Image (cartoon, rainbow over all chains, first blue to last red):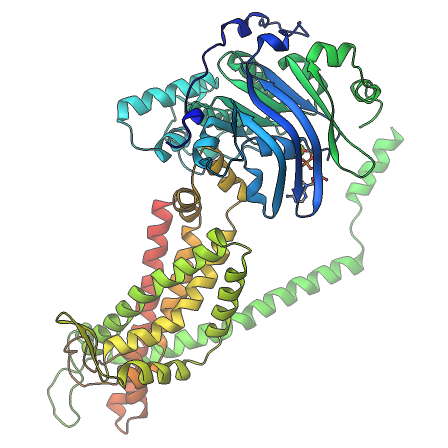
Length: 290
Length: 304
Ligand SMILES: Nc1ncnc2c1ncn2[C@@H]1O[C@H](COP(=O)(O)OP(=O)(O)OP(=O)(O)O)[C@@H](O)[C@H]1O
Ligand SMILES: [Mg+2]
């Protein structure tokens, strides 16, 4: 309760939803000045022990938009995304410099309640990691962490989450079966449903499709498409087509000579893909390096 | 065409004689070593059953040892079985919480911390302490010192007792439980922990709702391992539980136990007691196997 802002719902979002349509291929993104910044990152550097993984990152993740992170392997995309919900701290001796604001509140403020923060900023991992319990219990897990709910209400939450993850039809008859019996793609959508059930404001996805076949990938992309109005999404991907299909903003990361990751260019997806300012970005997108 | 032909030939070409001979030799060696490995277990079980079965009847569970020379009394060692269960109960009550909490600290809350390293080291040292020494320790600390009573509740009796024996066995059980439980907690994939924490789960919730249920099978194995080791320990009991020919009279009195009974009876000058020692050994092994079977089934039921 000591972080009121981590709980409030920022209101002014109406004008954001205009520019995206279902076909949404490289459409003009809204102007940044019309957008509310969900996460504001300034001068961010991150160290694993003494190894500096990323340095000097400045980026705004806009509310209600899909922001794609692209860049060559090892440039710190995963590291960056894990800084945003402070899950990176679980990897041992790490150090963070700079600020990350979540709707104006510094998430690295010592007063921040980490559990509440991570509930607001959900995460989907590269490899599906459902718990070895029933499908129903997987989705209910996050809710139950914060108290009991009557069965009727819980049933509804689970159903809604599974529906928004486009999984309901496939699992509604086996909710009490083990989640491990699902296919990889279904497991990943279950993990998305699990993250959606707690109603985060921001959803971080680290290469959510890399373990999936093209059809499952398409389903997840459609899912992201349908979620983008309700949630702010940041997605790491190695797939250029995917980035251009699902995102309205794109951040291109790359490493310098000393293997430290930098943000090279950030802007509307159409601009990054069609008229990138930085030569390295153009080279990467055209497939000439990385 | 020729290509297909060549491939088919490669596939159907038999392995060289040398390789097949080597394969057969290795296979044979494997079976042989397997047999060698189970010979001690097989012969042990055979000896115990063949020597113990003749004197076995269900009466042994309900009667105390018949005094030598008194004809017509039903012989048994129910008192030692009951005493063993009492001592083991005390040992479990102490060692399971301590061992598990140590394991949880080492694997979850204090992973990679200095304290965890120190605890692990100390635990390993403790697991190497001979059981006689542990018996002497319990004798010095529990048996020999004055009773402790708080508000009319007897916390620690003076003299030989089931409590003293339970403490001694607990000291032997804690390291086994802590080290095996730590290993099985560490086997749980880190992605599971991250998945829980990313949903806003605290470390406590993650540990108790995600990690422990998934390592329940390993934890149970550790507890059983410790229990079966403790069930057969004799030396520490000689210093702590001592022995009586009668039914146990309470946790604060000398208590008969199966291992000490086997020890005493096998040294006895009377063949009837020697034979009864075999029967007691058989019952001890059967009880330990039964306990491990039942708890394994229970774990499999509740955690798939
Ligand atoms: N837990 C860790 N401890 C130490 N170094 C790490 C750790 N995780 C990542 N690194 C290092 O940090 C750098 C960035 O890694 P990161 O995983 O963020 O890259 P990435 O952009 O996500 O790469 P990929 O596209 O292959 O997933 C790499 O040099 C990597 O070796
Ligand atoms: Mg990565």
